[in-house]
Image (cartoon, rainbow, N blue to C red; front, side, top):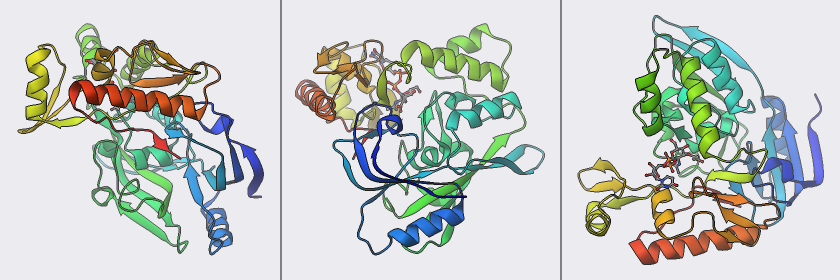
Length: 338
Ligand code: EPU
């Protein structure tokens, strides 16, 4: 199978913001052996390497003067099962929602709340994607990788992945050091459902049909009603993380805004929706150059047609400044600036 190498390659189809940026070199591979070969050829060249998935969480701030790698490793295979669980090994290049769709169709539980999240399987395990009360870490069994420096395989058990809110060892302590080639997921054969998150609670109260497929359908309806369709309007989903703040900061805000939404994280920490903070600062539906704040969900910055990376970065900075000024909270981007 030939390894596809492209030069001065447009990344427009590889970033969901739809920005027109180029990579000096773009390489896609279909097998682990090809990946090892590619890494060996790049080694010692001092070349900057970036591995991307679906490009749904990236903001390319300029042309990329190095090599971008992309996995086309695509398979979904059953590994084993016991009384309660079934295990699937899934290639890193599989579209995340194709995997969710298959699990729901076969009535295996665990991935349905994560339906319709853009991106690919490899990135899901790096980013610890989450939605509607579930994080992907809860169904990961192990993560199979190749070490960039040596080309050697290494399997990370889920406990070794240091998963946190939109965080993992691959994003953090070992950033850029390992490339995920496949992920082993553990799905439940018996219904285990999570329907306690806002809009899903409503679905739960009016529906008796709680199959994985029915929950998936409900999640897709909710996402479609709140989030921009990636094909129609460029965005990278939530632009900022929901901030976790000390309880005293929360109390100060609650004294002025009795209705501030919040989730208690621990005795002394509270999470506040960034969408609420941004809305309170008057940003909903606002525009800056070709970039905008999505009117139905202000946590999402959108490309209104001809946004440049600068438009988006400036808008993000302006939002951060006003949230800091009004609430003394520093919003942290969830999107990776490249
Ligand atoms: N809110 C407002 N104004 C709005 C919208 C929301 O004040 O216009 C407040 C409301 O209080 C609402 C709360 O924000 O209850 C939470 O909103 P939502 O349920 O839409 O979720 P979110 O916290 O803004 C997170 C994830 C999303 C994920 C949803 C659903 C992060 C950074 N984002 O958003 O993930 O889909 O929950 O679980 O954690 C993504 O990561 O790209 C993403 C879309």
